Image (tube, rainbow, N blue to C red):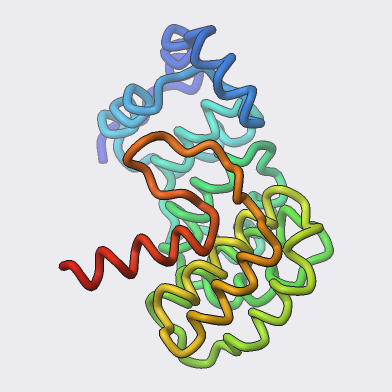
Length: 224
């Protein structure tokens, strides 16, 4: 870890990377920055881990600065209270997604936070709990009530807000992929609810529609 650059210097560098075309695309998806993410990652790689700078970047509220903060923070140094606070401060889907993926999942507090967030009244916070649950379904399902998760998904996913709906749908697909005994029920739920059935999917990419997603990944597993 080298010397931390000044906050103003880093913000100026991010401003110089701003591309109006990228911002326009991102804003259509609810995000609020115009920086190419490969270039942002290159900045983070050069800066390396800088916990104090990360806090300063996060405090600006600027989305690109917060994404950089996520990449240069030290996840293990953040308390569960601070992690909870930062999640609730996240303003965009990308901020939340990166925060959960790159910070919370690396923290020893991930499991208790998963449990707390899963039942939170704020649907965006709950979606973080569901996102962490999706990882457990695939990698460490012991102790999870998978049938109960399917019951909740069946009852609530259709009308859930977008971010929560997406996380629930991921859990539905993961159950169908990783747990053959529940695969038929997972596919049936997906087919009846039709969540993300018409989501535009580029050629050679897997549809997020759970029945199609499950079928494709299971096919690849059998072929491999």
